[in-house]
Image 1 (cartoon, one colour):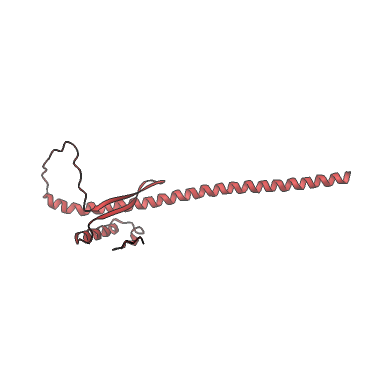
Image 2 (cartoon, rainbow, N blue to C red; image 1 turned 30 degrees about the horizontal axis):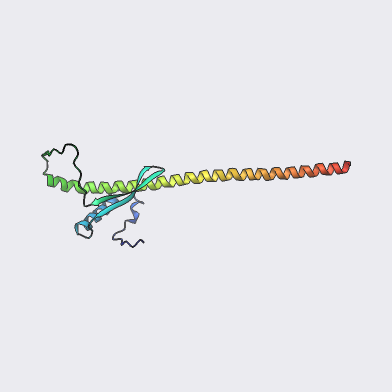
Length: 161
């Protein structure tokens, strides 16, 4: 709609919110990236903070961003079992799937939080409107009663006088 081309659509991802469904979307993004269809893949979603607060967030999905070293910068060599390359090859897909699943869960929670907040505001507004309508009704009723009493008293005074 904004001039962007959609390469794949995963419309039912929120209807059946399962890790396997999100995993297929992550795998499609990884495959397209590996085939050099994209230079980069970003995940843009609304991050859930609480029911009233959500933030739009963009995270680089691919290529995987480098992690800055913390601390004194000591270069420590670890021994990996299995070999580091095999470990990375096995863990990276799981990390990417989990990262995308977290984004989808955050977006889903944000949507529910926003709906809950909107419904709460609508209920508050309806109660305020009801209160105002009751006040208007009671004022009109009081004015009608006052008018009738005035007419009755005037009629009685005319008969006496």
